[in-house]
View: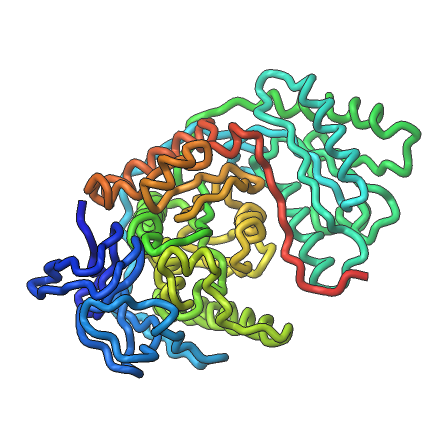
Length: 495
């Protein structure tokens, strides 16, 4: 196992791949470096003298300015490194030298072909409440339906949430749009839309967002309109489950896959192991005609020009500029620091500045060209790599990926989390310690790059095969635990 890594030839820091004790001498590209302090796993140490005010370079890019002189072997973290980022910026489109990945041999999985041409990787029956007031009813309907679930229906899930009323402007639009997206999601073989009757986003209003539906697949129940909502729901759910049970898995091209990519609880190894492995996976899927979605815009700050220069055309570049600056405006409007990130857990793991975090986060995008830029709640239209407007919050961003059309979400983490999203959520550990300690959460261990010297290309191939297996029905750990979560972006006033 290697003790450290110098990520880019231009870096003036290295990253400890395991704890390095004070006084340890290591050879960094022919230069002898003795650590002046204990260096925790995932943390940085200087491999060249760095003067106060000098740029600290990692991934080949500046991650901030030194706040004091740092000798060779010195620990670099929050005590002596500060972000170099500013507020709103002007950007220049520099696409030269960037080209898309080459097509590769087609791959296949076993999925569910829907009548509208979309493909699901699960055949579930979903209960979508229009308003939080009916959450308890939705859960009761879910429990009863599960007792009568026919063969062929993977699961019955009630996606409870606190929204749908007492919301204003963008908040209300977010709720209506995301609920409509989920109602139309191909992982749902059938859907019960459960309303109260007096809410802002009542069924009649929501139908304008849902669009035309197959009445056998989507049914509506407004509980104020019936005497016994449980009895009425039981009849409807029986019809919906019987309809969904008729679908069978069949061979489908991987070009029909849409995969969301998200990270959370990141550590100093996220940008070295798991995130670049997901980036290679993204390139592989795109090369086979598939689609990936990169989100969490605040964790693009400081690395956004890398994505901008990979936009397939100027229109997409302009949309990406708006994606970044609109989110900064959102922070400013609400009186928040744009660069409040990283979180305490990120810092404990070795991430110091937002640039440090973002340069690691954007590794998940691989090297392919950006083919689409999506507003929050907007569904994917273009195959290839897409950027999606959503915050960094794990549940909100993962839900946004599902709403955009992702059938599966890949979630990399260095500290671990048990959450799920509306779709199968594959947890990818950045380090082997986490994978071994939380085996009930983690589906894939990218930390083997460090502990077992497994080549990243091999890890990406294994991850690709795992995704095909999950798309074909293999349950992820969160599904085995029975977890299904939904979170909608809260932006406005609650009345």
